[in-house]
Amino acid sequence: MINLSMVMPTMNEEGAIKKVIEDIKKNTGQYNTEIIIADSSTDNTPSIAEDMGVRVIKVPVEGPGNALIEGLKQSKGEIVITADCDDTYPMDSINLFINKWQEGFDFVNGSRMKHLQGSMPIVNQFGNWFFAFLIKNLYSVPVKDVATGMRLFTRDLIDSNNWEMNYSFWIEVLIKAQKNGYRIAEIDIDYRPRIGETKLNRMRSGLSFLKCIMKYL
Image 1 (cartoon, helix red, strand yellow):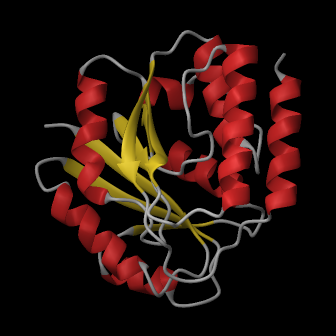
Image 2: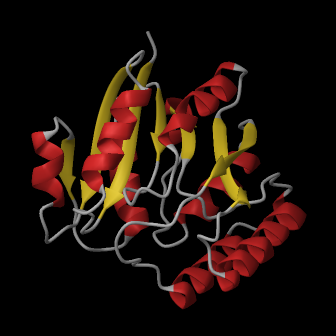
């Protein structure tokens, strides 16, 4: 049986977390699955998760990348799928990610760009296209969505690097996976409007992405 970890950074997602966890459980019953949230909340998010049997890792309010990295490090699965906990990502796509892993890929990127359903502002779409263009031309990374939160990692990939970027971890893992010879695949997934308020700071994220891209040249 496949040992799967589902890891999600969370910060005040009490409006969505119950549905997201229910969707994960509905789509992972055939696997040996652990669900982890790396949580920085001040609301009832962690207590709701714990009541549903989810492992809660408390992390400081330092940014989503650091939370995600901590969740990945503490996960136990041979493969790990990440997602956001705001109901934007389709948990019925979990098997699509696992199918790609079974084909021999080490990292599977879930691209939202084909099925946005009006859920991504135009400025975010342009930024995503711009940074995807940069890493494709500078590093030959074959993806269209550099900022997606739904991805599959092998245990070997997680343990292979000293992950160091916070607000640009999403770019860092793409670049390092490519530079170190890991096999990268991308699949199209749906992307829905989020439940609750976004915490994204576009300027900070954009500058962090650019800094990360230049750092590893």
